[in-house]
Length: 627
Image 1 (cartoon, one colour):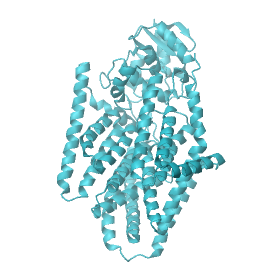
Image 2 (cartoon, helix red, strand yellow):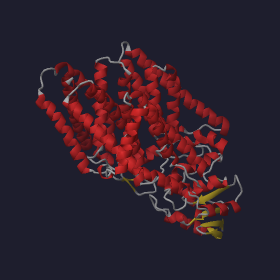
Image 3 (cartoon, helix red, strand yellow):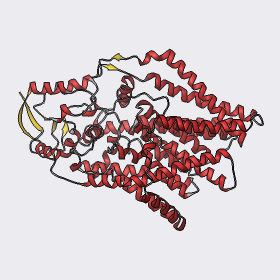
Image 4 (spheres, helix red, strand yellow):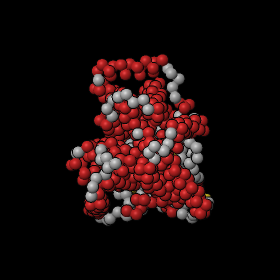
């Protein structure tokens, strides 16, 4: 066992050095790709792409995986008896050095650890004691309560939108397309696109049944978020033998992945919760059941993950790819791998193509034209080419640990492959590592600490699985030094995060209470009544306002232009369509020109003032007629 761990350590170290050298070569020979440039398509004058960093990450990940597998195979066969305790001590020393350097360089996580509040300690000890008496059902009840409370925190009505910290630009970017699809405007036709995928079209049947307003929209989002959390807990509960470790690991994931960002920045941010979380978490639980023997999930999974690509391409491609790679990996754990792998690839291509074709015909039969699927990826390319909103990755940062966990996971996967050890554990370790590397691209692009919190859940799940495995080994009598050290560190993380969750749970109650207040009327509700008095349901009209999506949904009107929403206007062509609007009337909100946005929209206001005259207004909202 010790020689295997030393082989694994050397494989990771040498592969990391190889990737570091490769990254330096990419920087040297392809650095020109990141040179600032002018692009007349965009409303901002200078673009700063991150082509080099993305190239380094994608190529580096692929090379690292191949190198890791090759070195594991070579060293496991040759390392036996050639290393002493000194090198083993070095492994532990490097582990502690990484912890110290990473966290001292960025204390983002340490500064929000608990102040050891007495009530939090008592609560944590109480839950542990009661679970020993009542068993797993008590922990299940606690988990369901936490899931319900965190999900319900995302629910609010129209009364919360005005001056309440609901972060209008984020809400507008996500909700505007839903309001337009609900009113009959299909995505990917006549130039109507958005940056987050076809989720409005896929959610439309739900809103056709229940209707659409802010309360119903946030309620649907809360249900999808609850399903996401439930998928994670269901997996941990079944895969982890020690139910207390499973529960505390689940709370750790909720704290870092969700609650911590809500404490610091109380934005529901539907773009991730549940948008980019629902399908990856479904992948985790469904793949686990499939690997355990529920083979009927095979074809439905391919269909579901094909839908995931339509729902949101950047996450959906990762989900579909992780599923496909895990199936191929599973075949190579057995004899005659080539035939099985080819079957999976052919099945995946067939089901995916069939799903796309079925969606195309659905749109054609309903709207009379085929969708332009090329524009589904338009915003991914825009942001990639321009670097808009992107942030570079710091060299020394806690992200190092996230990738280290995936490196260890891939190394274990290589060892399982070499030993032909076909188990559910082997397949899930590989799937979680590949999924984690894929969703990490979200942080690689915009390297903000909050985004790291959003995407580190596969790494945290792997830590929980590791803690359970180490606990069983230690309980059976193992006194391996490295195992004791790693288990102690993971236990410290579990305890501190659970204490932090308990210590900060009051924030959930406070945010929920604020969002449930309906202090009507507000400026937004007054504007809605004003619009209703001067429009009729189904009318095509133009709102120039950050709250346009809300106004369209609440007044049952449709945008007169086929352009993206307020927060997604990054193309000069879309700006020109708005500035050259020739309709008889429009509604202009004063906060359009003063809102905090990525770029200045003031020239649009000037064009409106030149071509339209104010007929009437209420508060910040004015009705303008064409001169």
